[in-house]
Length: 402
Ligand SMILES: *Cc1c(COP(=O)(O)O)cnc(C)c1O
Image 1 (cartoon, rainbow, N blue to C red):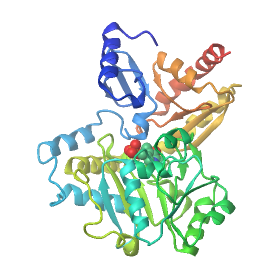
Image 2: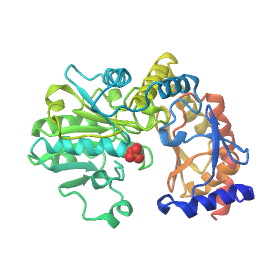
Image 3: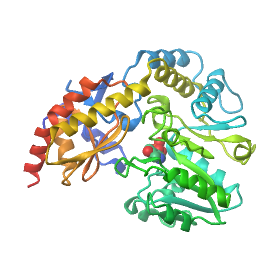
């Protein structure tokens, strides 16, 4: 990958000289995208199998998203929450509808996943309790409150002390959850599929058990659908595949198709009424630009039947990878188009580098797992070009890491 041009290298240097280094040095300077492809400033094309981390639900430059954003940009970009807009009202109604939220439900719009989690934390405090139970391996964001619920020590330790009263339980273990939840528990927060942990689904029945356990003690069940939501797993939200009705869900990533927007959806009047006038806010949240993007994303997923498409393409991927019968592949995890190719050796970073050199963007989400979260619009044939290249990428990475 030292194949980038001197001009490209120079831009990366300027990045390094002008940014706080929390991301390390980015891999590439990208110039534009189209559908599932992106181009770097040297004109090299890549198949974008990460989709901006499950954000670019419609790919790059989708005409309906471009039209909606362009029209709204010429109408009103921002009005503040002293006022509202038709786009905001329609986006709220659309999200509540796809969440199958009952009468009396509500949404608070913000600008990111972390802010949606922060809103859930404040909602939970309004139960009069302070305990929060989350899962080992959980990722809920990087702002200080959300970070308290994220599990990874490397993210947390430099910033301790974090929020008190947080317990992380063994993921997928119903007995451990039951033991951790009690009369002080305000909220249990769970990802239906743990994205950052390596696309690890919760075992069937676990979310239903969590629903039962939280109901017994009067704690809120909040599901973090930031990565799994907006059609990615083949339903609007992954918990719908399990038939569970939560008290609230967090949404973000795919909702705006790349325009920053997040939200907390509260289910029913009782939970929705926990937060009242003056208790929370956001300057940018619910702005008409982001809301018109969300409306276009939801409408396009619906009109193009992209959830059924995500299921079909995801299943084809599983079958194609299995057919490789490669000794370095253990299998494929996940649902719809939120997937991890699981390896038998911890060479995912080397595979991702080799993939990039061949024009594929994949994410080594764990040492032994490659995350794929491509646009929901990607075709089976486009994804198959990666599967065809995979054996050579694996062999090259294994040789380099030998
Ligand atoms: C990405 C993510 C977050 C954080 O979202 P940001 O927009 O980065 O703040 C929280 N929870 C889950 C499950 C995520 O995937």
